[in-house]
Image (cartoon, rainbow, N blue to C red; front, side, top):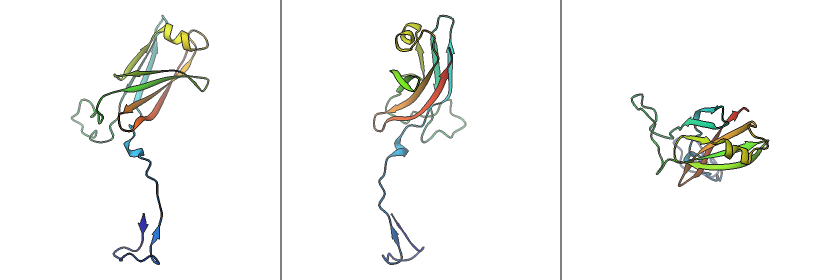
Length: 136
């Protein structure tokens, strides 16, 4: 990156130079939004969310924002006491966790946990995370 006076030819004495590493953050999928978590009487937990678009999602006439990826995929991580105890991949913006699944990974049946959700990209990997607490 070079910065110097506007409309001036490059002169090392008048311009500052910096080397920057491009991390590719703009390619990461944005964190999902409007998460919901509902536990039923049997102990099943149903998670839901809405994806965001990195580009083309500003139109008011759209029913849904563009996918901006080759396919739709999300990683849902179950976190208990700051430890990821399970991870699932789903192709839809929803995931139902059965009471049996939760009982196998949580410290106690019906224990509270945090769900961490990221949209997946074939080119950039897991995107930014959104978290929702699911109470007992």
